[in-house]
Amino acid sequence: MTESRLILVPSAADGTTGIPVSTIRGERPGPVLALIAGNHGYEYPPILALQRLRAQLDPAALAGTIIMVHVANMPSFLGRTVYFSPVDGKNLNRVYPGNAGGTISERIAHAITTEVIERADYVLDLHCGDGNESLRPYVYQAVTLDARIDAANARLALAFGIDHILIDRNRPTDPARSLYCSTTAITRGKPALVVESGLMGQSDELSIECIVNGVRGVMRELEMTAGGPAPLEDPTYLDPSAVVSSPATGNLYPLVERDQLVEKGQALVRITDFFGAVLAEVPSPLAGKVLYVVATPPIVQGQPVACVGTPRKLDRGCR
Ligand SMILES: [Zn+2]
Image (cartoon, rainbow, N blue to C red):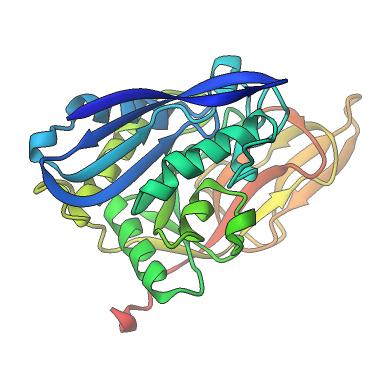
Protein backbone atom coordinates (compact mmCIF):
# COMPACT_ATOMS: atom_id res chain seq x y z
CA MET A 1 0.00 0.00 0.00
CA THR A 2 1.26 3.48 -0.87
CA GLU A 3 0.01 6.40 1.23
CA SER A 4 0.40 10.11 0.58
CA ARG A 5 0.15 12.65 3.35
CA LEU A 6 1.16 16.18 4.17
CA ILE A 7 2.77 16.69 7.57
CA LEU A 8 1.44 20.08 8.64
CA VAL A 9 4.06 22.11 10.47
CA PRO A 10 2.32 23.91 13.35
CA SER A 11 1.49 27.53 12.60
CA ALA A 12 3.28 30.35 14.42
CA ALA A 13 4.07 34.04 13.90
CA ASP A 14 6.24 33.17 10.87
CA GLY A 15 3.53 31.07 9.21
CA THR A 16 3.20 27.40 8.44
CA THR A 17 4.18 24.89 5.77
CA GLY A 18 3.62 21.29 4.76
CA ILE A 19 5.96 18.36 4.24
CA PRO A 20 4.80 15.89 1.55
CA VAL A 21 5.51 12.31 2.62
CA SER A 22 4.83 8.97 0.91
CA THR A 23 4.77 5.75 2.89
CA ILE A 24 5.12 2.52 0.92
CA ARG A 25 4.30 -0.51 3.05
CA GLY A 26 5.56 -3.77 1.67
CA GLU A 27 3.50 -6.93 1.90
CA ARG A 28 6.22 -8.71 3.86
CA PRO A 29 7.86 -7.60 7.12
CA GLY A 30 11.20 -5.84 7.04
CA PRO A 31 13.02 -2.68 8.10
CA VAL A 32 11.81 0.90 7.81
CA LEU A 33 14.01 2.93 5.46
CA ALA A 34 13.55 6.72 5.41
CA LEU A 35 14.59 8.65 2.30
CA ILE A 36 14.77 12.39 2.89
CA ALA A 37 15.08 14.87 0.02
CA GLY A 38 15.06 18.63 0.00
CA ASN A 39 16.58 19.55 3.34
CA HIS A 40 18.13 22.07 0.96
CA GLY A 41 15.41 23.31 -1.36
CA TYR A 42 17.65 24.20 -4.34
CA GLU A 43 19.01 20.61 -4.59
CA TYR A 44 16.85 19.00 -7.24
CA PRO A 45 18.19 15.53 -8.22
CA PRO A 46 17.25 14.00 -4.81
CA ILE A 47 13.73 15.43 -5.08
CA LEU A 48 13.32 14.14 -8.65
CA ALA A 49 14.84 10.74 -7.78
CA LEU A 50 12.15 10.21 -5.12
CA GLN A 51 9.42 11.15 -7.62
CA ARG A 52 10.79 8.42 -9.88
CA LEU A 53 11.19 5.82 -7.12
CA ARG A 54 7.68 6.42 -5.79
CA ALA A 55 6.23 5.59 -9.20
CA GLN A 56 8.44 2.51 -9.58
CA LEU A 57 8.22 0.81 -6.19
CA ASP A 58 5.78 -2.08 -5.92
CA PRO A 59 4.51 -2.88 -2.39
CA ALA A 60 3.93 -6.49 -3.48
CA ALA A 61 7.66 -6.88 -4.13
CA LEU A 62 8.79 -5.06 -0.98
CA ALA A 63 9.72 -6.32 2.49
CA GLY A 64 9.45 -3.55 5.08
CA THR A 65 8.48 0.09 4.66
CA ILE A 66 9.87 3.06 2.74
CA ILE A 67 9.12 6.54 4.10
CA MET A 68 9.88 9.24 1.52
CA VAL A 69 10.12 12.91 2.45
CA HIS A 70 9.68 14.49 -0.97
CA VAL A 71 10.56 18.08 -0.04
CA ALA A 72 11.72 18.64 3.52
CA ASN A 73 12.22 22.38 3.16
CA MET A 74 9.20 23.64 1.22
CA PRO A 75 9.81 27.37 1.94
CA SER A 76 13.32 27.07 0.45
CA PHE A 77 12.14 24.94 -2.49
CA LEU A 78 9.32 27.27 -3.53
CA GLY A 79 11.40 30.35 -2.67
CA ARG A 80 14.38 28.97 -4.69
CA THR A 81 16.96 29.73 -1.99
CA VAL A 82 20.45 28.26 -1.50
CA TYR A 83 21.39 27.02 2.02
CA PHE A 84 18.98 29.24 3.96
CA SER A 85 15.22 29.46 4.47
CA PRO A 86 13.69 32.60 2.96
CA VAL A 87 11.46 32.83 6.06
CA ASP A 88 13.83 32.68 9.04
CA GLY A 89 17.27 32.80 7.35
CA LYS A 90 18.30 29.48 8.96
CA ASN A 91 19.95 26.43 7.38
CA LEU A 92 17.51 23.56 8.03
CA ASN A 93 20.38 21.07 8.06
CA ARG A 94 21.97 22.89 11.02
CA VAL A 95 18.95 23.11 13.35
CA TYR A 96 18.12 19.43 14.01
CA PRO A 97 16.56 17.89 16.03
CA GLY A 98 14.49 21.07 15.87
CA ASN A 99 12.14 22.74 18.31
CA ALA A 100 8.32 22.58 18.30
CA GLY A 101 8.21 26.16 19.64
CA GLY A 102 10.95 27.60 17.41
CA THR A 103 11.09 29.33 14.03
CA ILE A 104 9.81 27.62 10.90
CA SER A 105 13.06 25.77 10.08
CA GLU A 106 13.22 24.50 13.67
CA ARG A 107 9.58 23.36 13.53
CA ILE A 108 10.23 21.55 10.22
CA ALA A 109 13.24 19.80 11.76
CA HIS A 110 11.18 18.81 14.80
CA ALA A 111 8.42 17.37 12.59
CA ILE A 112 10.90 15.33 10.53
CA THR A 113 12.70 14.12 13.66
CA THR A 114 9.54 12.91 15.39
CA GLU A 115 7.43 11.76 12.43
CA VAL A 116 10.10 10.30 10.16
CA ILE A 117 13.51 9.71 11.75
CA GLU A 118 12.21 8.30 15.05
CA ARG A 119 10.00 5.86 13.10
CA ALA A 120 12.81 4.63 10.84
CA ASP A 121 15.51 1.96 11.23
CA TYR A 122 17.79 3.45 8.54
CA VAL A 123 17.96 6.96 7.08
CA LEU A 124 19.37 8.25 3.79
CA ASP A 125 19.68 12.05 3.72
CA LEU A 126 19.81 12.95 0.04
CA HIS A 127 21.70 16.05 -1.08
CA CYS A 128 23.72 17.42 -3.98
CA GLY A 129 25.89 20.42 -4.60
CA ASP A 130 23.68 23.40 -3.80
CA GLY A 131 22.90 26.04 -6.45
CA ASN A 132 26.40 27.49 -6.08
CA GLU A 133 28.41 24.26 -5.67
CA SER A 134 30.12 22.35 -8.48
CA LEU A 135 30.29 18.84 -7.01
CA ARG A 136 31.40 15.34 -7.96
CA PRO A 137 29.24 12.55 -6.45
CA TYR A 138 30.22 11.17 -3.05
CA VAL A 139 28.71 9.92 0.20
CA TYR A 140 29.57 10.77 3.80
CA GLN A 141 30.20 7.66 5.91
CA ALA A 142 30.03 8.81 9.53
CA VAL A 143 32.39 7.23 12.04
CA THR A 144 31.08 7.18 15.62
CA LEU A 145 32.01 5.55 18.93
CA ASP A 146 29.50 2.74 18.25
CA ALA A 147 30.89 -0.27 16.37
CA ARG A 148 27.43 -1.53 15.37
CA ILE A 149 26.49 1.80 13.75
CA ASP A 150 29.91 2.12 12.12
CA ALA A 151 29.62 -1.33 10.53
CA ALA A 152 26.10 -0.58 9.29
CA ASN A 153 27.13 2.84 7.93
CA ALA A 154 30.00 1.19 6.04
CA ARG A 155 27.61 -1.37 4.55
CA LEU A 156 25.15 1.33 3.49
CA ALA A 157 27.95 3.32 1.85
CA LEU A 158 29.11 0.36 -0.23
CA ALA A 159 25.53 -0.59 -1.07
CA PHE A 160 24.73 2.90 -2.35
CA GLY A 161 27.37 2.42 -5.01
CA ILE A 162 28.86 5.92 -5.41
CA ASP A 163 32.58 5.29 -5.86
CA HIS A 164 33.86 8.08 -3.56
CA ILE A 165 33.20 7.63 0.18
CA LEU A 166 34.23 10.42 2.54
CA ILE A 167 35.06 9.18 6.05
CA ASP A 168 33.34 11.69 8.30
CA ARG A 169 34.70 11.89 11.85
CA ASN A 170 33.45 15.24 13.03
CA ARG A 171 29.71 15.04 13.52
CA PRO A 172 27.96 15.94 16.79
CA THR A 173 27.31 13.16 19.34
CA ASP A 174 24.61 14.80 21.49
CA PRO A 175 21.11 13.72 20.35
CA ALA A 176 19.68 16.99 21.72
CA ARG A 177 22.09 19.04 19.57
CA SER A 178 22.49 16.80 16.54
CA LEU A 179 22.39 19.78 14.10
CA TYR A 180 22.29 17.62 10.95
CA CYS A 181 19.45 15.42 9.71
CA SER A 182 21.72 12.35 9.38
CA THR A 183 23.29 12.89 12.81
CA THR A 184 19.80 13.05 14.30
CA ALA A 185 19.34 9.46 13.13
CA ILE A 186 22.81 8.30 14.19
CA THR A 187 22.57 9.80 17.69
CA ARG A 188 19.28 7.90 18.06
CA GLY A 189 20.92 4.59 17.21
CA LYS A 190 19.91 4.44 13.54
CA PRO A 191 22.50 4.00 10.78
CA ALA A 192 22.42 6.83 8.25
CA LEU A 193 24.22 8.07 5.19
CA VAL A 194 24.50 11.49 3.55
CA VAL A 195 24.45 11.26 -0.24
CA GLU A 196 25.72 13.98 -2.59
CA SER A 197 24.82 13.65 -6.29
CA GLY A 198 24.18 16.65 -8.52
CA LEU A 199 25.31 20.26 -8.76
CA MET A 200 24.61 23.91 -9.49
CA GLY A 201 20.81 23.84 -9.48
CA GLN A 202 20.71 21.34 -12.36
CA SER A 203 18.33 18.41 -12.80
CA ASP A 204 20.53 16.20 -14.97
CA GLU A 205 19.62 12.60 -15.69
CA LEU A 206 22.95 11.13 -14.54
CA SER A 207 22.68 12.66 -11.05
CA ILE A 208 19.06 11.54 -10.66
CA GLU A 209 19.69 7.95 -11.80
CA CYS A 210 22.74 7.73 -9.54
CA ILE A 211 20.41 8.32 -6.57
CA VAL A 212 17.69 5.97 -7.85
CA ASN A 213 20.25 3.18 -8.32
CA GLY A 214 21.83 3.92 -4.96
CA VAL A 215 18.52 3.56 -3.13
CA ARG A 216 17.90 0.31 -5.02
CA GLY A 217 21.30 -0.95 -3.89
CA VAL A 218 20.51 -0.10 -0.26
CA MET A 219 17.09 -1.81 -0.51
CA ARG A 220 18.80 -4.93 -1.81
CA GLU A 221 21.43 -4.80 0.95
CA LEU A 222 18.69 -4.52 3.62
CA GLU A 223 16.86 -7.45 1.96
CA MET A 224 13.84 -5.27 1.24
CA THR A 225 13.89 -6.28 -2.44
CA ALA A 226 15.18 -9.32 -4.27
CA GLY A 227 16.94 -7.39 -7.05
CA GLY A 228 19.05 -4.27 -7.25
CA PRO A 229 22.63 -3.25 -7.94
CA ALA A 230 25.38 -5.18 -6.13
CA PRO A 231 27.52 -3.37 -3.53
CA LEU A 232 30.63 -1.52 -4.62
CA GLU A 233 33.84 -3.54 -4.37
CA ASP A 234 36.65 -1.06 -4.79
CA PRO A 235 35.66 2.43 -3.63
CA THR A 236 37.94 5.39 -3.13
CA TYR A 237 37.86 6.34 0.54
CA LEU A 238 38.65 9.97 1.31
CA ASP A 239 40.32 10.43 4.69
CA PRO A 240 41.20 12.96 5.94
CA SER A 241 39.04 15.65 4.40
CA ALA A 242 38.46 19.33 4.99
CA VAL A 243 35.80 21.91 4.28
CA VAL A 244 37.61 25.14 3.44
CA SER A 245 35.97 28.43 4.48
CA SER A 246 36.27 31.86 2.96
CA PRO A 247 38.37 34.42 4.86
CA ALA A 248 36.53 37.29 3.18
CA THR A 249 33.30 38.57 1.65
CA GLY A 250 33.32 39.52 -2.02
CA ASN A 251 33.43 38.00 -5.51
CA LEU A 252 34.66 34.42 -5.79
CA TYR A 253 36.57 33.01 -8.76
CA PRO A 254 37.12 29.22 -8.72
CA LEU A 255 40.69 28.20 -9.66
CA VAL A 256 40.05 24.42 -9.68
CA GLU A 257 37.37 22.07 -10.97
CA ARG A 258 35.35 19.43 -9.20
CA ASP A 259 37.12 16.04 -9.17
CA GLN A 260 40.52 17.69 -9.72
CA LEU A 261 43.56 16.50 -7.76
CA VAL A 262 45.28 19.35 -5.91
CA GLU A 263 48.50 19.78 -3.95
CA LYS A 264 48.60 20.95 -0.37
CA GLY A 265 48.77 24.76 -0.49
CA GLN A 266 47.38 25.01 -4.03
CA ALA A 267 44.96 27.92 -4.43
CA LEU A 268 41.35 26.71 -4.69
CA VAL A 269 39.56 30.04 -5.21
CA ARG A 270 40.41 33.72 -5.50
CA ILE A 271 38.33 36.30 -3.64
CA THR A 272 38.24 39.93 -4.73
CA ASP A 273 36.48 42.95 -3.31
CA PHE A 274 33.70 44.58 -5.32
CA PHE A 275 36.21 46.84 -7.12
CA GLY A 276 38.34 43.93 -8.33
CA ALA A 277 41.22 44.05 -5.82
CA VAL A 278 42.36 40.61 -4.71
CA LEU A 279 41.56 39.97 -1.04
CA ALA A 280 42.74 36.37 -0.82
CA GLU A 281 43.67 33.19 -2.64
CA VAL A 282 42.43 30.35 -0.48
CA PRO A 283 44.83 27.38 -0.28
CA SER A 284 43.95 23.71 0.10
CA PRO A 285 44.94 22.53 3.60
CA LEU A 286 45.75 19.07 2.26
CA ALA A 287 46.65 17.18 -0.91
CA GLY A 288 43.68 15.43 -2.42
CA LYS A 289 40.62 15.57 -4.60
CA VAL A 290 38.22 18.48 -4.95
CA LEU A 291 34.79 17.09 -4.02
CA TYR A 292 33.09 20.42 -4.53
CA VAL A 293 34.09 23.98 -5.20
CA VAL A 294 31.84 27.04 -5.05
CA ALA A 295 31.50 28.25 -8.63
CA THR A 296 29.27 31.33 -8.52
CA PRO A 297 30.47 34.83 -7.55
CA PRO A 298 28.83 35.66 -4.20
CA ILE A 299 30.85 34.66 -1.15
CA VAL A 300 30.47 35.62 2.50
CA GLN A 301 33.26 35.37 5.06
CA GLY A 302 33.05 32.06 6.92
CA GLN A 303 31.02 30.23 4.25
CA PRO A 304 32.52 27.17 2.57
CA VAL A 305 34.42 27.58 -0.70
CA ALA A 306 35.38 23.93 -1.26
CA CYS A 307 35.67 20.44 0.21
CA VAL A 308 38.86 18.46 -0.40
CA GLY A 309 39.50 14.83 0.59
CA THR A 310 42.67 12.76 0.47
CA PRO A 311 42.11 9.45 -1.36
CA ARG A 312 43.28 6.28 0.32
CA LYS A 313 42.74 2.68 -0.56
CA LEU A 314 40.87 0.57 1.95
CA ASP A 315 42.81 -1.42 4.50
CA ARG A 316 41.24 -4.75 3.71
CA GLY A 317 42.67 -6.52 6.76
CA CYS A 318 39.46 -6.09 8.72
CA ARG A 319 37.06 -7.46 6.11
ZN1 LIG B 1 22.44 19.96 0.83
